[in-house]
Length: 271
Length: 113
Image: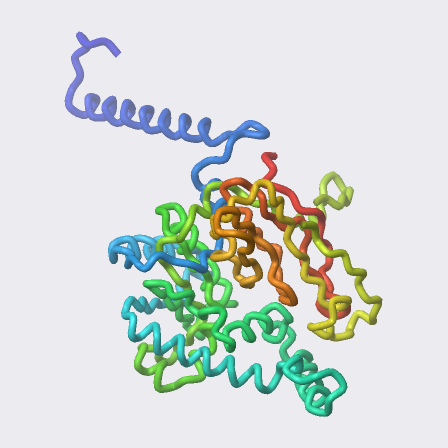
């Protein structure tokens, strides 16, 4: 288009729109090109955050600024959910006394549990051991996930005081699940938590999922105090704080998992 | 110090493992390269199973596994914090019977495909 060309107002506007559109298209094209990666390319920032994220169980005493917690909760708020029903709600506990109260209750429950399921407290061949082992195996059958050997080891450690439930973190985020959510709301809550822990990782905070927080659900008084009300139930907790050491300095090795790969009518097993 | 190898018990698939039997509950132990360890204590602090401890004279501290304690989950947090990369797990934990791990391959660092 020549500068000397005379246009009336409408034509001028159309031309302006066209020019703006092509500039926008050009930007989109450039972005798409940048996202196309070669095989073996370096990790981008998001991938790097995912690969270096560790579960942090030892935190500095320093409190995390409130704006950083708000920031990672924003990451959670934009998680995908089934039917966009967003079946979640958050409770942020930054009060030392409140965290101590939550901790004390979980420890008490774990102590009760070890007494009734830890057969290793009694010598081999004793009657008590046989009785408790039978009880443990019955619970295993009824609830194989909760009574998996790994959490059992953790329950023992918590009961002995070797392990803190909330890892003495300065901030604990409780994620509540709306029981009326579309489909499987537990999956949506998992997506929220995943966004939160990766968001935290990207701004230098350490996080750890606290499955034992579920124990709090059995204490109605504490639930009321915390503000857990129907139709919400406590799904998970995430401890947040500044990590001790430098756990993100290197990636670790992890076991590989079977991938069944279907392509061109053929099935392959990859690792 | 290398991992202690114990053979897994052969039991029925629905058998519930006895947790304190090392044949039925195989917690893999970590490998520690003592010449790389500078006794900085970080791994003992981050280990979720609280398995590691320091020993030796004050000017030459080294890390080791606590005696008669099991529970290594091969999370490799010890490796992640270790500046000299001297402590690591290279095998997953496993159980006999009901909780036996399925479709698990060897340990790998992140691969750039």
